[in-house]
Image (tube, rainbow, N blue to C red):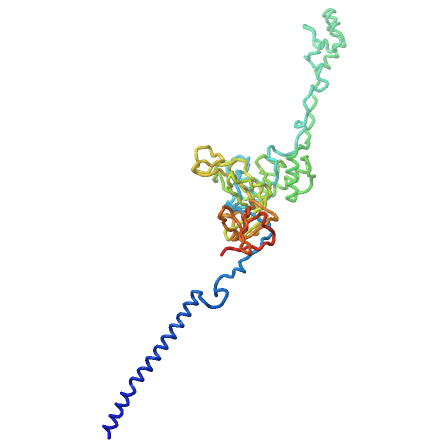
Length: 458
């Protein structure tokens, strides 16, 4: 029984095997065909074949690549390198003579009435003004203002004077009266010597000298007096009139000022006691050491406002005109507004330049000659605590107002030469280009008008 079942099973298996194999082969062919179709469709889609759509997915939208010709103002901006600082250092006109006994620290701010330095342990004080100290100030005397002229009346007729009329051999007193000289010459010697008039003249011929009158103090005058008194008043001293006259009231105020400085109260101001400047100064560097003799180069100074100095090319310095507004970019990128304050009048050849004497042509190996351009910054707070460092100065080179413009990317090169624009309907029109600035370009031509749609090449 078991053998029969086994035989039938093997027979059934044998009978089923060819059909099963055929069905499996059929399924395999169908799966392979389906995979082939799917692959072909995928490849065709990737190649852009068939599909029935007007545009391929992912392709640039040409309708969105059109721009209009617009009117605008184009500004060409140029950047040059500069240096932030306090400007060039200038020697202080110190006129005090003696030994330097104290100096301020570099960078110190010295205001009106402050000590600049000490010479022989005497302070040299800063005052404000433009007229240099050129003489001592104090009360004058009558001798200082007495006019020159002829001798004072009464000089003639003194003993031995040119008009005394004294004859050779006459007795003392003869001829004391100027009008009797002729009579004395014609009479006898006895007669000439016995006249009572002559005797009386002897007494009058040698009068005693009168005592000298006391010297009177008188005011000295000048613009330097006005400048000094203006400073004295600004420091809070009163009791005098601010004018061109140095009076006793001025001298009394000077004594009080000298007392506050620890100086002898003379009421007079020496040439070396003060130094004038246009305002508060910032000390640069000392030209002498403690213990050395004071002199004109004892100290240097600068102003207290930070500024920018640009060494501009002498060939390209047309932008540097006084009061021209510029933008200063600080080292951290922050922009601040500046203004051209001054332009140097002399070009300087760069170090290592050619042997042409530093001409503006710059034909040497060192490049073109430069001129210094000073830029001031009104808002000092905008600079922060930065005192020095490299900066960039941006200025307007050229400007075109109310002109037709397009993005620079809209320009196309024409086969016949020059530039053109492609209109929205695919036509190409020639244009003339002008100023390029900020990614746009000035365009013109017979076919160019405001509002015209043009394509940006893809």
